[in-house]
Length: 367
Ligand code: CXF
Ligand code: ZN
Image (cartoon, rainbow, N blue to C red; front, side, top):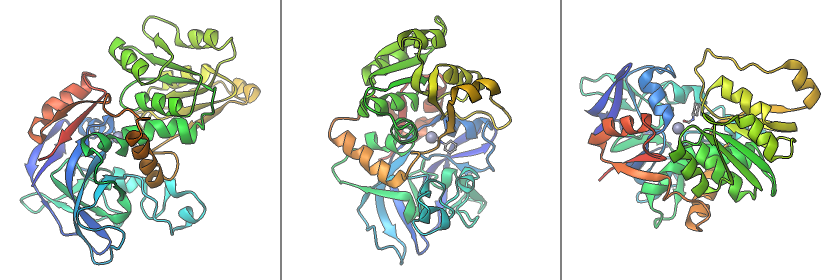
């Protein structure tokens, strides 16, 4: 079967690979669609160091075609969204309500392309093992993953749109709804309006935010931001974003600022644009060797809070299901987000378009 495999830094392509049969608690998923996320490109470029070869893809949806002998929650034919941040429900962390950091499915193993026990499920034709990015490896015609990593959805859901809930939407909307805990009337500043930032905006809108400031360098992204709920557009290349946000909040600062680029200087701007006791949420993936500078005295005096965020920021399985409900009810716009679909053989074009900011989200669709 065809899969997008990264074989070296900036070397990737479509390969014919094998996926092993599901183990007792695993399922085989025939992929319907897989979105392309900047984190996939971080694997390609080496910005997020990952053992290679590695099958890309961590934003997918498909249909179960086979279940392992101990799987009881799912059956052949179930439509599912894949979840790169599952909670087993039984480990020490899950028992304390901290399933986002489930010990049975550690994120760092997924980032290394490994299953929790360190094994692989994918094999190149010469028998070499290949990793699966975020333990999903779903930019492929099919994949085999742990049953905790799928969320069942109604068979009527359009998976070519709903697949983006699996990373960009749950990450962005989760930063507003869960980690940022936006309340009706709040002011929210979003730095970076790509596939994640646009969904911070949607999450803030769904939560009833009063003002939503979208900051980006691209007029096209700002236009999309407005369509998805931003109330004020700030071109960071032309205007001083912090000064604008201060002025628009009556010199108070935003209740919440979310950084979605992964640039320490922008994280500082986000922090500077929040009010006393306000919160800055860092969602952007910065290179692992970079620090962010905050003034220690200002931190002390203002009581501001800076918080990291990954995945949904909460129980990702439940949150994915709720986002699909929002989509089905017309509250979450995925149709605007998915601006182009590609065949798997067009992956080079899809990656070029990702880098050139052509799409809100580009999605690879399988037959
Ligand atoms: C990733 C970023 C790196 C940590 C895990 C989650 N998010 C999405 O692409
Ligand atoms: Zn992602």
